Image 1 (cartoon, helix red, strand yellow):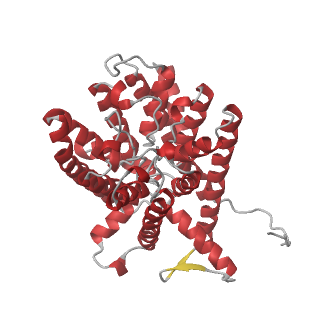
Image 2: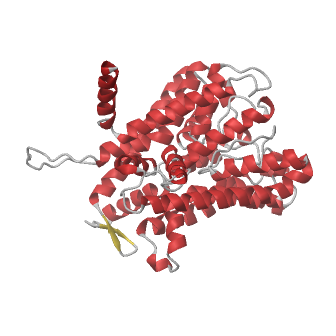
Image 3: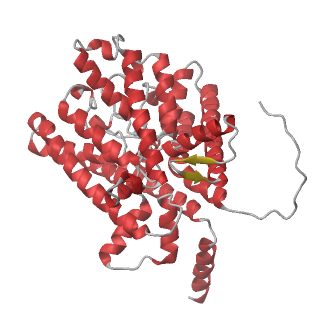
Length: 450
């Protein structure tokens, strides 16, 4: 027994010295493996699936992406759909947040190590008020998902019956709030393209889920907009600009496309579809029209929106709205010859600007490398590949119909991109936040740029 104790002590010592983001990434990988094993059970699927199918689907669920290599509405049993919903909920809520909620329910203390992991899982900059933020997350999740399920049942119950309709409503509420994009319906939400309940409740859920828990906590606690934090103001500003932009541009580019908006006779119906498809692009991945029928210019617009994503500490992916806004502010400050970056009467430190540039550069590098590798292995589908990779990295889930055509190598690449899109910023944030004092100072030199 003594040798076992020594080994356990050594393992615990090694784990303590592993960066928290790397441990969290490992925990997400374990959850994906367990989810894939659950999906492989005969009771989870109507027709047998391969391990490749299961791993891809589990990864897509845990990373709240929504890309699928088979029709989840026809191939999964109710048990399989429950497994999928559980993976989506854990992936969207965050493993450490879920663990904290369980410990709190049992009356057990979290401890300093647990708080460190929770901070990394929430991508939060400080340890202060973490438990209050966690309680806010629990309240928001319960209220939004229960209310969403009840409202969606108004549409689904009359159409599918009480039991099936309630389950479909609950599943879509979970999937929408967590910005996953999975559906239990064989045709997804396409048959509900002009349904008022679906076009109101689903967007409301993924906008709230994608705006970020820190922003929601600020909105709940601070009644006056003047008291909002700079983070909240930048997130809301970026969201308020990007939503109208995406809706208007989608309507303008696709208005006469017979494969998308052109199939609807009335202008009101086209505007409703434009609203839904415009707001879902950055985060959720639901669609009420055929994405494969989009014009190439619209696809490029969607790629840019998917890479931007939603708000930090949210269920959305991408480089995040705050990163995008600060990058624009830094660019504008450079052309104005300003030495200090500021917004809403507050300054933004150089370390934050450098972090933005690093996150953007590495994200773009991951995306372009993945596109290059996929183009080599899937010749002749560049736009489909670029769209697929952007959707995977932004954990969006929209596809031009290329997911089912991926070979085994292509699936592995997309799995890696989805995983990096979900947990990559956590790992990257650790190394960015690590400060090393320079031992040697070198003389400054001029480099010609641009």
